[in-house]
Amino acid sequence: MSTRTDITGSIPRSGVPAFRLIDDQLSRVKELIDEQLTVPAAPGSAAGANSSARKRWAGDINRLLEYVSSRSGKMIRPGLVLLAGRCCGKITDEHIRIAAIVEMIHNATLLHDDVIDEGQRRRGQPTINSLWGNESAVLLGDFLLSRVFKICAELEPQVAGVIAAATIRICEGELRQIVQRQNWQLSESEYVDIITEKSAALFSSCCYLGGLLAQGTETQGQSLAVFGLNAGIAFQITDDLLDIVGDESKTGKTLGSDADKNKLTLAVIHLLRAVDEKEKNAVINSYLERKNAQYDKDALVETLSRYGSLEYARNRAQEFVAGAVRALAGLQESDAKKALIETARFMASRAV
Image (tube, rainbow, N blue to C red; front, side, top):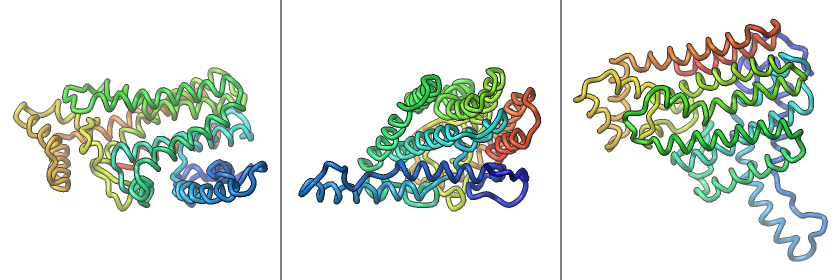
């Protein structure tokens, strides 16, 4: 286990400053994920023509899996598992395994999201669906989830149950967001409910499991869960802001998909509440028509800025960060606790 405690120095491999406290452990998580993203060339019982055929198609599949593996992100969710564990005790092999599981679940959802949103770039590279088609992207996402199922079969029932519940909530949140497309009456509280399910629930489970696996008390586990939930909401509000105001060369992914798919996010919900009926109709029409995406984006950003909607969303993200920090008040001061707080602030500062 790394003994480094300085979390303000050089940026670690993950790109999250506070993660230099757990850089070595995150490398182990990445190694475990890479081990899972492979198909054996031939099982011991295979022989002859069947063996040769399996080698050929296994090689084709492994090339796709290697591409997925090479596109590693910031690994925020695994990092939260590890830091939460260090808040309550020592990082164990079980932490590494759970951290790999949550990242594989996250990567599977990204593969599926890129199909839904017709994304062309992800993590600075072309998406699987843009290179090899929607079928490959969907089935690769399913492959990752099947590997997750296999690993979860070996976990303690309580731990497996938390992961299963979080995965269900992700799917429910995504489905609810799709159902609410073009609902111009969507309220802020309804939006927060959606992103809590589709995104923040997994953050919460990561933090809770980190504490649980380090033999933390139930009180510590619940504090970490509340921290993760609030930090996750702040993360998603910020991610939705980046979809409007972000620079694709910096974010590394296709932006504007929320507007393209008529998904309402917090800044737009605030705007629709702030404008008069005439301008509200103009905003809605700009969402529906979108004949010139760049023009529409510029016009939308200008209107959001004029009515203070971008600033409102940024402020709400900071309020959830403050809630996350308050949730940790009862935990003993430590480098890990400081790193968790720094991570929450980092997640909400990306669209500033």
